[in-house]
Each structure stands twice: as structure tokens, then as C-alpha cells.
Image (cartoon, rainbow, N blue to C red; front, side, top):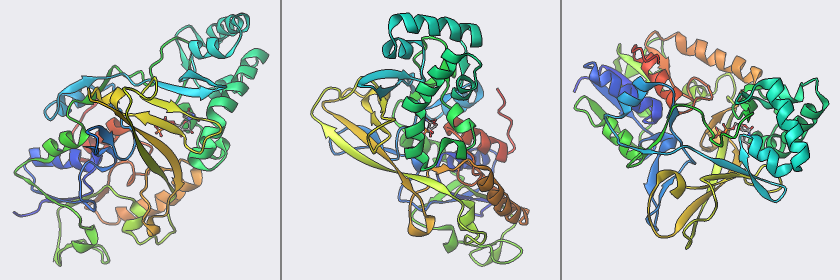
Length: 382
Ligand code: UDP
């Protein structure tokens, strides 16, 4: 097979891109370092027969019907709206913090005063963020903001990122709103579902195509040479496109220094119980070393004896030491360092960084797929 394009990384962005290009008639060579595809969305059945997400919970949600149609070629859906609780003051309260959380943590008199004020300030049914509560001119709302910040955001964020919330771009905390409603859903997108046979199966089907060849357990270094002005594939000048979905600093031997990423460690525990906890994810923003526990049965809808949960521990990340990068760390100075690598990449006219790691953007799965559509030159605007 002649190769028209090389896609490095068989994760969410890499698989989507490969399929889109193959459908256009390009022959694709995919290179994947791991023994499996699907990247961080990889799921598999554990020793107890429970479908688990090996790299932590992945909940698919989007406002883009065109993306849903594309994916529906490869999977059926199990409707699931993600719910998260947080352990605060010995109780489980909904996150995003909402009017039900307020009722659980305040006396009924105080809660109704606050509810009224919140509705007046932000609108009944609105979503706002923790920053707007903290900046409120109303003493009661500001004090509520300080309470929510302390109990839900501050310690969780310190554990997750090992830095003060103020050291991160404010939109990191704004990802989790404060809801002036009783909507207990974690996401508000109109489409929220899980692939009915899991993510691995979805991506396997996506890249099962006569024009796609996947090489696993191989690094791009075994195939490509970027040390000159042009790209070489197995020693031959390569003029097709090369799409890179791994960390960009690694591609250039960390020449400007390591781009900071954050990693996670998961501890999987099986319990001979029907269910372990009352929601798919329970966040532990305060005392514990882990940030959250996810019980997969809740989101996969699997009906099976026993249950498996994952305790999630944030961890530092050094690519040189072989840690797995999960999150870019959204801060101005990191974005500036990333730009140096992006500029370096742009010197090759046929090299394209795509996806969460290579673009250094805190994409969710749908956004990573949309980035792949964009890279493939296909419009997918809702
Ligand atoms: N966050 C928090 N407390 C929570 C949930 C989230 O402080 O109970 C903050 C934390 O900084 C986290 C960010 O909000 O990294 C984004 O949360 P999200 O659930 O989107 O993170 P992800 O699922 O991507 O790890």
C-alpha cells in the first residue's frame, strides 16, 4: 500500500482523523506506541467481567448532531447523563453545586434567602461560575462563594494540579459551573450517551477500513526522520501529510524544555456488592489523597454481579521518565512555551499537530474529534 498520510497516535483524534481521510480515498499509516488503540478512552473487561475505563472515566457529550451521526456509523448508544456527587461535611451533595446542594448544606431559612438572591443575581435556571460568586457585591452571595470555593474547588484543585487555583487559567474552574437550578447533570449538552459496546469497540470499528494500516507498539522514530528540512519516511522523502497527536515537545526532543502535563494514577478495586456508591462519580474535594471514585456500572449500564471502582490520584508527569500525559496545564507561560513548539512544527509544511496533547488544549472527547474534522478539512459545525 502506498502511504498518503501518516497519523501518529491511535487515540480519539488519531482514529477520527484516519477514518475521515480514508473515507476521502487516502491511504493511511497509523503508528501507535501502545499495544492498544483508543488512547485514554481505552476500555476493557476486567478479571471480574466489568467493563472499566483504564485511563479514567470518559463520558461522551456533545451539542453537535453531525458528530453524533458520524459516530453512529460505528456504535449504538446507551443513553446516560452523567451525575457527580461530592463528599462535603459528611454528606454527598450534587456537583455542579446547585440549589439541592445548597439545601443539603445550609439551614432551610438560610438556603431560601440564598436561593432568592442567587436567582435575582444570575437568573432562575442559569449557570454561573465560582468566580462570579466570589466577586459578587452581595455579602451573602460572596460568603456562599467562599464556602463553595473552600469545600468544592480549592483543595480538589490543589490535589489535581498541585498549584493554587489562581495559578491556572480561570476557565479551568469554570468548566464546573454553579447551577442556579436543580439540574443535577454534570453536563448540559443535548446529546449525552455511552457507546453501547464501549469506546475500544467504537474506535476499532472506526479504523477498520481497507485504506487504514495500523502499526502498534511502535514509535514514530522507527518510521520518520524530522531532523532535516523535510520529513523522511523509512529513509524516503515523504510529501504526504503527517498528523501528530502526541505531545509536541517530544517530537522535537524537548529542545525548548518539557511542556508541563499532569498525570493520573488509578487504583482499581472490585467489591462483591451490587453498587458501591450512589453515583457514577463521587468527588472527594477535601481530606483524601484521591480526587474521585468512579463506579463504572453506573455509566456503562452493564448488568453484572459485583462492581469495580477506580480511585483517582493526580500525579506529576515527566515524559522523559515515561509518565502518561493526561492534561495540558492551562497557564499563560505554558501556552507561550507551546507556541515555540508550534512554530517549530510549522516549518514543515506537511506536519500537523492535532488533539489534546499535540495542540496543548484541554479538549473533551467531542472537541478532540472536532479538531480532527478540522484537520481533515471537513466542516462539522453544528
Ligand atoms: N474541580 C474542583 N472540584 C470538583 C470538580 C472539579 O475543584 O469537585 C475543578 C478542578 O480544578 C478540576 C476542574 O475543576 O481540574 C475541571 O473539572 P473537570 O471535572 O472538568 O475535570 P476532568 O474531568 O477533565 O478531570
